Every structure is written in C-alpha cells, then in structure tokens.
Length: 441
Ligand SMILES: *Cc1c(COP(=O)(O)O)cnc(C)c1O
Image (tube, rainbow, N blue to C red; front, side, top):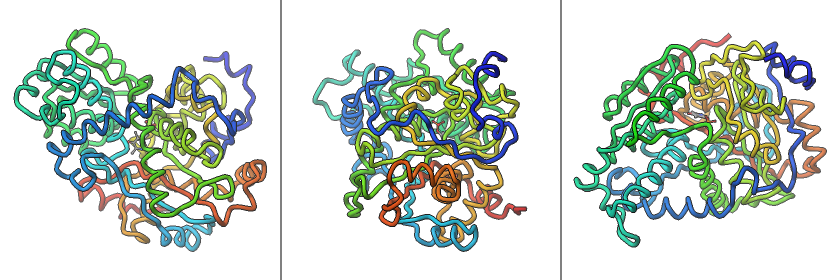
C-alpha cells in the first residue's frame, strides 16, 4: 500500500486527498487509439448488436413497454436548452454549442444504464445455454424463450451478481423473467427501494455490511460453489462491456436523424458518470470506434470515490483503491460508490479517454434539481454527476488548455455536448420528492 506513494507524483493526487473538485486531463489520450487493446475487437461490437436484434422479438413479447422501439432497449436523446440556460443563469457557467441529454435514466425494464450491459450479458448467457441444449436452433424466433419449457429449463440454473443497486436491478429483473434462480449481493449503502423492488421481482437479495467489494467477493464465492451458476463479473466482463458499447452505434443514428454533424470541426463531447468503469468505458470505447478523434469522452466521479481517476492517474488501475489515498468511498451517488476501478477498463481507457472530473455530493443535488426545474426531467443523484462535465469544461484552466491543444477552440460554437443521464426512472415517488426538496447550502 505504501509502494505507490514513493513512485507517483501526479499533483492531482494531493488535491484529491483534500476532496477538492478536479479536472484531470489524461496524458495517455491519443487521437488514434489502439482498439485491439486488452483483446477487444470492433467486430465483437457488431456481434453484440446483432445478438440484441435476435433477442428483440423476445424482449418485445415479455416487456411490452419496448413495443415502440421494436424490442430494442434504447433511450431518447433530447436537447435541453433550458438546462443550458439554467447553468448560465443559476451557476454562472457557460456551455458552448448545444447541450443534449441521453436519457438512459428512462431505459425500459431497469430504468438505468445497466439495462444495456446487464441485460445483454444475461441474454448472451441464455443464448449459449439454449443453443447448447437444443432449446433454440439457429433461425428460430427467440420468442420461444418466453414459453414454459424454456422457463423450466432456465430454473435449473442460477445467476449471481454483486451490485451497488442498478446492476442488480437489471440482472435481477431479466434473470427472474427468463426463469433463473437469481441472487443479488448488495452493499449496505444500496438504496432500500432497490432491494424491495428486486424482491418483488422474485430475486434473492443478500446484504453486506461494508462496501461493494465485499458483496462482489461473496457473490463470486457462492457462485463458484454451484456448478449450475453463472457469475456476472462487473469488473472484468467483456460481455457487459460490449453490451454497453452498442450504445455508441445507436446514439450515432440518433444524432444523424437530428442532423447533428460530428467531425473534427464539429466536435462531440460526452460526459459519463463512472463507478467501476464498465458502463462509461464501454460507451466511450464504442464512441471512439464510431467517431475517432471527433469525439471527446470524459468521466465524472464523486470526490469521495474517484476510483477510476486514482487508478488511471497512478497507472496502478485496480491495484489501488480510493481508501489507499485516505478517502472513504462513501457518496450519495450510490451508483458511483465504488472504491476500486476495473483494471481492464482502466487499460482500455488509457488511450481512449480525454479526462475525468470529480464533484461534491452537494452538486449532484444541485444539478438534478436544476434539471427538474428547467426541463421537468427527473434523474437520480448518480446521473446528476454528468452535468459537471459540460458545466465546468471551460471553467477549468486544464479544460481550456485541452481544447487549445486539440485545436478545438475555434469550433466551440458548433460543438455538441451530451450529458449521459444514467438512472432515475424507477425511483419511487416519495424518494424523488425527497431528492428534489433537499435543502442545499
Ligand atoms: C452503474 C452506474 C453508473 C456507472 O457505471 P459503472 O459501470 O459502474 O462505471 C453510473 N450511474 C448509475 C446510475 C449507475 O447505476
């Protein structure tokens, strides 16, 4: 634990230890990153996209709320000029160009970004099992997976996952619907309503004192003891990652439909709240494969749990935790309350990512309240983190320098900024009201 202290000097670490908000610009960023890093391949994103299309008839059948999107789990992209105005008037912060919201907060089935990777991983596992055991033949409509024979078949298998909340919701809901015995291992700081909702769907919820890492370790152990069990590995799963990466193809189409041009003189900036890193990492990787140097991806983390930033700034990735630099890892942003990052994602982001912002918990509430007042859109506190990006990019000297170094300063008026709203739709009414009424300093 002391080893890194002697070798690593990045001045951002001192400011992080003091719980100051920072913008860290990634020194490893490259205009043309290596997409083959960590054994990844662009062809595997195509594969994931095609698999989700094969499953669309099944999803549409068992979750009729996906009718409008033809059984694809996809969220709206909406322009939010009134929020842009609110950032200017109430916060004194200028977002250049146009500001949009990617509403993964409103994704079908699980109401969060986890409805991408999490559901995808369970579908892939189910396809593997079904093909192997002759429940499906190539060319069949996947609707057959909704029948009693299939449910009975899947009930012989178990699924385990460790979660701060939303991953558990997405894995729990889809697994229970397919027929699996599903157990979600949750950290103590996971929200009560998320546990209640999971139990209603028929999942088993186990709670652990201490943080998310303990819940994950226990889930992994129990799963390994059961030969019929499958463990969803949030930190290392390539499958989750590809499920998230498909989002990039989908938003590219949405931008095209809205006639938003993205190229080197019309830069796209995307701001993603980050926990363990899988969701924002998969999306950022996917976006870089679509747009190359025309897209600039930034993560946002709470000042008490900036795990990806600690990992990337030291180069130690998963070998260091926020606790190692004296932070608690505790935050109101339950989806981001992760002390140790995914090492795999840290490696992949080394050349893909532009930078990472941190913000205080108080700001999460400021942003979600401002979004509610200005646009009447509700998102959960973790998702509110996304706004720190567009709001502060020009406010930081480091941000202005990045823009100048990348030759972007002349193009800011024609830039596009997307705050990625990662959750909120399943938050119960009384919990919503308490977030929105929360007094601020
Ligand atoms: C999980 C989650 C994130 C971050 O995703 P990671 O894969 O953990 O980095 C962001 N926001 C919300 C609401 C989440 O549930």
